[in-house]
Length: 93
Image (tube, rainbow, N blue to C red; front, side, top):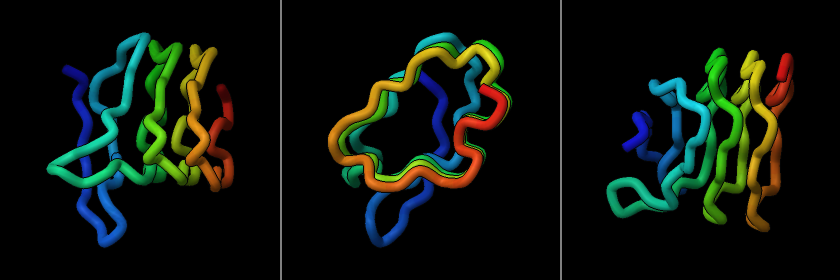
């Protein structure tokens, strides 16, 4: 299983960090019974092996620099729920 660190908020769970640098990742729709609503600032930054990420429909926000320096990133699979993408989210991808 992927290594994700989450933080509980009033809205749901925020993915704050991915600790496994692998080519393909799927973010779970829930954590601790709460919907994963946000990809936090710098959550995937610097993962050089990362090529494809699939986000669940529950994610409505991608934080600032979330995928910063993911130099191999080729594909991000998004769902209809996404409403906001932060500053520099895909810088140096």
